[in-house]
Length: 265
Ligand code: NAD
Image (tube, rainbow, N blue to C red; front, side, top):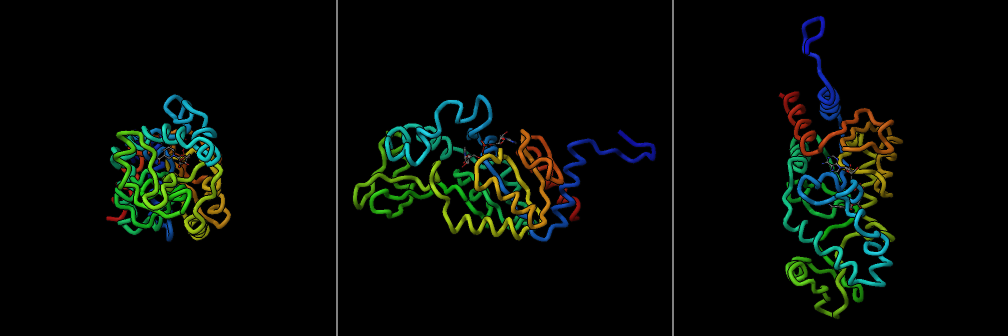
């Protein structure tokens, strides 16, 4: 399409992405905030998408809360076993690589994720805050010693055997934050500092329904930052965002990076 002056007219979401690219290029301290939607293109289901979301099949308070875990650890391990297999077998997708590329270019200064799947680090992101923990390590619920999960993960996935502490035989709980648990203080503080100090927050693939991570955009806005949001569905922050793109993160983020790159040439 061309306008009356003969110049090409940008059509959404390209014009929105173009604006987002300019904002990223001009930002002094851009940070990203991601959620489970970043990893659905890698085959890991999110929590709240209809039909495919993990919560359509189970009661979260029963299987994925610290109270449920203490009452019935076997129910938690039964639920988490297929998800663990999916995560272990998953590969980073173009959305993860796009965000890693933005960091390499010096544009993105930090990435805060709610994901536990470690795909951002596998895609190369360095300055990463995993506010809901990760599957990399597990902690004994009796003696609180921490162990690398890789020592038992294959056996757990293949046999369903609940992992036990090699020192005291207590149950090993993966270092992921369950409902009812506090977030790791140092990581959360660092993420909040990033939100306070950034001038641009790029949010992708999150319903922004889980606090306190969902409050980080409000902290950023309160300190003068602008918001870019890429998600399939509307969120509570859309009206306060400078740019909103409703689309697939695995398509829109690589497009965005290309636009940033072309404007850097
Ligand atoms: P959520 O399920 O609440 O929201 C995901 C959002 O992403 C939804 O709004 C959905 O429409 C959108 N989405 C899904 N696929 C998308 C795609 N390809 N492109 C664009 N948008 C897409 O997830 P959340 O906001 O991260 O918060 C809930 C919790 O989910 C967090 O505690 C997180 O730890 C946990 N979780 C993590 C993983 C993982 O590590 N991959 C998987 C499931 C759940």
